[in-house]
Each structure stands twice: as C-alpha cells, then as structure tokens.
Image (tube, rainbow, N blue to C red; front, side):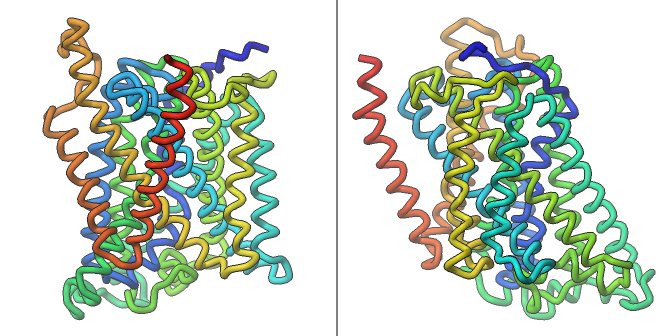
Length: 453
C-alpha cells in the first residue's frame, strides 16, 4: 500500500456532521453546568454568544483557504505556506496537543457517566475501554469513519432539538410541574454577574473551548470526494447550525435552571428534562452524552492521525507517520493518539470531575492560538494571491469583510488569552502554553530546520 495517499471518501454531509460532531461534546453537555454556576445566567449567555462569534470568524477565514487549497494538513499547511515553516510546525504540534486534551476530557466525561451506571467499575477502567474501542474504529476506511460520525452527530443534534422543544414548552408554561417562567428574572435577580467579572473571564475560556472542533472540517477536506463543492457547502452551514444549537440551548437553560445549583456532575440538560417529568430522561440524556463523548474522541483520533500524516510529508513530524494501512488510514498516528489520550487515566489517582475541568480548561490557550494562526494565515493567503497574480474575484468562496474578519479573529483570541492571565487560576495555563511554544520553536530550530538547509 502506498505511503503517500489518503482515500477521498468524504461526502458533504460527512464534512458537515464531522465539524458539528467535533464541537458538540462533553464540554458542552457537562461543562455548561460549571460555567452557569461560576458566571450566572447572563454571563453564560453572553459568553456563548462571544465564543460563537470567535468560532464563526475562524471558520470564515478557514473556508476561503480550504476551498482554494483542500488538503489534509489544512490550516497547519496554510501556516507553513502563507506565514513560515516555523509557524506551520508550531501550529501543527499545538493543534495535536489540543485534540489530545479534548479526547482525554471526553473520555473522562463518558467514564464518569459509565461508572455511575456500573458503580463497581472505576472511571479509569472505562477510559481504557473507550480508548481501545475508538482506536480500532479508526483503523477502518475513512468513508466508514465519516458515516459513523454522521450518525453520532445526528444523535446529538436530535437530542438538542428535543431539549429545545421541551425547554420552550417550560418557558411558556406548558409543563404543569414548572408553571410559567417569570420572564428574565433568572438573569437579573442576583445581578448580571453574581460572582463578579473575574469568573466571567474564566467562563469565557471554557466556553471558547466548547466551540473548538468546528475547524476540523478543514482537516477532513483532504479526503472529500469533491473538495471545492463539499467544503463550501459544509462550512456555510456549520457555523449557523452550531450557533443555533449552542446559543438557543444556553438561553433556555439560563432562563430555567437555578444557576447556583449547577455543576459538572449535575448537567442542566438532565435536570430540566427530569423536572419536566420526561420518562427515563436522565438515562436517555446520559446515553446521549456518552455518544457525544465518543463522537468527539473519534474526531480527535481522526484529526491527529491526518495531521501527523500531513506533517510527516513536509518533514515536520517523524516519517513513520506517513505510512498507511490497507484501508489508507495513517495507523501510526492513530496509535500514538490513543497512547497520549491516556491523560484521562489520571482519574485513577485524582477525582474524575477535577480531571475533566482541568483538561478542558488547559486546552483553552492552545485552541485560541490555533484560531489566531488561522486568521494570520488568511492575511498571508491574500498576499500569496497578489504575488501569484491570482484575482480574489476568481475565488469560488470569498470571505466577507476582509481584512476586518481576520483582524477581529486575532484581536478576540488575544483578548481571551489576556482574560486567562487576569484569572489567577488560569494563569498557569497561559504560562504552560508559552512554555510549549518555546519548546516547539526550539525543536524546530534543532531538528526541522536542519532538514531544510
């Protein structure tokens, strides 16, 4: 089997659902409980609106480049070509770490739920089982992965739509157990920010993390059957759908749920459905969350394997990651992702809930840096078009509002990182992110640059 080729088996519906599936994960279903408790209803709603805007800006910039140059390396390759090889090297390895931490968070969340069903089994045991299961699934052809992710994401979307209908009925007093909701009293009764602005900054970091994953559509572009058509169609729909699902759900939750009683282990989605007397709501919603977690882990394994494959071809990763199995899957990338996602096994020694919140918050700065690099690459892409005498009018997908869109992308992500510095609890995350960047810059100078002298 060739070391150099991936199989183009993705359809437009696969790309759309992969992006949505990678975004709607445990960080949304479970993390929202902690965010609501920390920042209150108003802060939660505003936070998700801001996070959604930051996500949409990154997608718009990515779309213009991905439609013009659909490759599996996506924004890592764009950073290499349109900024510098050093920028591409750091972007690729930072994104790899971002997805591995996302996988660890989702595995931990699913393990928390499974251990609540099977009380004699520790969360770390379930973590091992899930890692092995997803690893095997990712050895199958990419079309099988796309189809599986399509149905995984479909389950999550149906669950959110059902929740929206039930929550809307509660708001309008159609559920007797609740009675009519008293307007916007939840938003104002304890002030707009009941715990102050600093926790709001913390919440913004977690919220931005919950949106990260939508950019996966760019990675999947390299295995799309008709890249130009399918990517354009997928990206146009992904941003709007994610904003609708996230913001509308958050608005309804914020109106209904007592913010001071929320937590990671007390998901507002489950609480609302239980109090509405929906039969088996608790079990059904927990099952949906487990599916959501496995979907996000599945996307993480896919993204990391393809990223390592692409970077190996540009000598930015060890050459072993170029190898593919009989199904044209870069299997060494899958294996190393499985091994590194074992971060979640720390729940054997530390409380699983603590591990979950620590992991998703620790990926905050890295995720912001990735989106920042996408916006920066967009500037470089436009300069490349000028240098190559390619008219912007010839692009089949053009970013609206250029250069405002990439400028806002850089500013917003820098502000989120600044917000992390303001919060003493998050400051170490920024410091660790800076250390990672310095480490990868050093590795580039010592190892990668030597191969290109």
